[in-house]
Length: 277
Image (cartoon, rainbow, N blue to C red):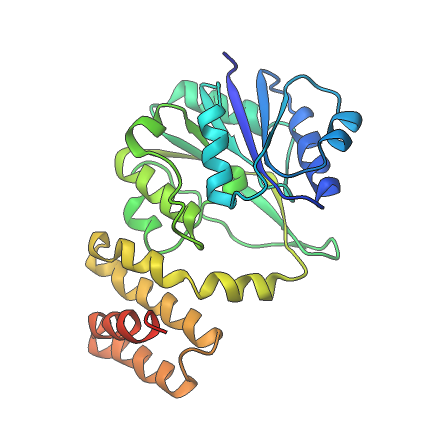
C-alpha cells in the first residue's frame, strides 16, 4: 500500500498540460505515492516522456469529471487521496505538509491556499480564507476550497461516498460539504498549488451557471437559515448573468431577498420557472 494516491481526470488533446501536472507530482518532496490518470490521454506519449512505474492510466474516454474522480478513487490504494486537475500543478512541498497535518490531527480533509494564474502568466493576488475545524456553516455560503489543493483520508469514502455524478456544476463543493458534515477540516495557509485560468472561462461559466440550480435544490433544506439568503442571491446572480433572468427582475428579487426577507419566494420562483425551462 502507498501513502498517497493522486487522481488526475483528463481528456484527449491535453497531453502537454497533463505532463506539466504529472511532473509537479513527481517533483514532490514526499515520494510514497501513485498517480492515477483517468480519461483518454495519449498513453504512449505520457509513458515515453514520463517513465515512472507509479503512473497508472485508466482509459475511460466517456467519463465526466465526477465519474473520472470516482473511478480513480475506486482504484486508489493510498491511505490518503489527493485531487489534481490536468491543467493545474503543485508546489513541491504540498503533499509532505498535508500528510504531516493528517498525522497530527483527526481531520477528514486538508486544503491549502493556491495561486491563481491568468493565461498571460499574471498572478492574481486575492485574499483566501483558511478556515479549520467545523466549517460546514461557513462552507455552505460559498466554496473556498480549491479542488487541486484537497487531500482526504481514504476512510472518508466509507462514510461519505463518492462525488455526485448527477451534478454538472459544483460537484466538488457538494463533496466538501458532505465531508464537512461528518469530519473536521484542516487548512494550510500557504499557496501550495497553481490554478491556471482558462482563456475560455466565460463560456465555461455559462455552462456551469446554468446547472447551479440543481446544487441549490439539493442543499436547500440542509442550509441554515442565515445562509439561505446568500445561496439564493448567488443563484439569482448566475441566472441574470446567463440571461435567464432580466435585469429588472434581478433587482426586484434581490431587493425582496435583502430587505423583505423573501428568500423562500425567490427560491420557489427560480425552482419552478427557471428549472422548468
